[in-house]
Length: 126
Image 1 (cartoon, one colour):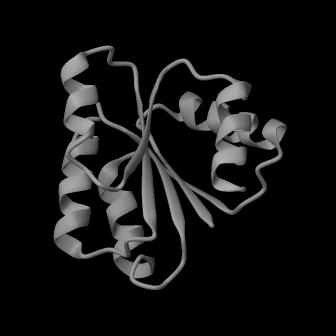
Image 2: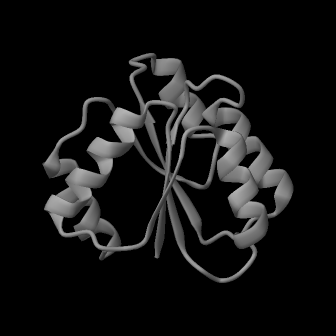
């Protein structure tokens, strides 16, 4: 499984990588500071049977996380791509909106902890 980190805040990406290391998650990680770069990567690599787990921030300049999800569906990217929403939003409407997307397997509100990544490792057998 390949892991994709998509967040406009490089500190959040660094924190995610460090927590993954501490949790013992050793899969290949690709990080992107915007949705456009993540979509370009998936346009080249996302049509095979490779499994992907994407950590996706919903509030980013340019393409929002919602825009990325909508574009993924129109691109017919492999169904082996699962998404965990990462957000600082505590709005119930965002959580409700996430239910509209089959790719979304979890919804994390920042800040997250080592325990979140340990549970993730167990849930997805990483």
